[in-house]
Length: 236
Image (cartoon, rainbow, N blue to C red):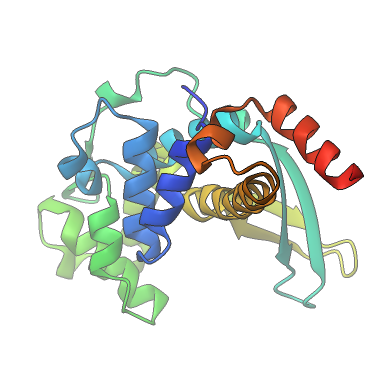
């Protein structure tokens, strides 16, 4: 996976800034996997999309992830650090992995970004899950599924597409509560792209003001050379 160069990063930032988060994830996945037809990314298994975003983030910003989550018991802000590579599948051929499974009398497929968008306005978590499963049910009667069978189906989908739901186990240092935090691969990558884009724009502004260079000329410089010129400008 190739890291995002400055011009490409700024282009993605410009195109993604006004998009919905799910549309933005599709845009970033298209950059991560140019071999995927862009029109079909929203229908790919969510785990494939998440894996592509994590790989692009690791290639561009490094594998270390520093994050935080609030304890659901006491509200304490918890910091965590992990290596993005532990969240990735053991093999890189997940494109060929099965996309459907059977559980509790239903045949279901792995959910996609389009499915998430279809239930995004549902505020109730249980109704949202059932609506998501309804979209993903290929055969069988979901209306006849009780809560126990629903849990079985959710477990089967987790096994089918492990990277679809990136959940971290956390323990609160304040109250000891053992909880979970969900990692949004698209939001994680976008936040870093947004921050880096603003840094690049500030660097372009300073160097263009000092030397009259164009944005393209400045971004063509290596990060080391750009930093050296910036140091000279600051030393004036």
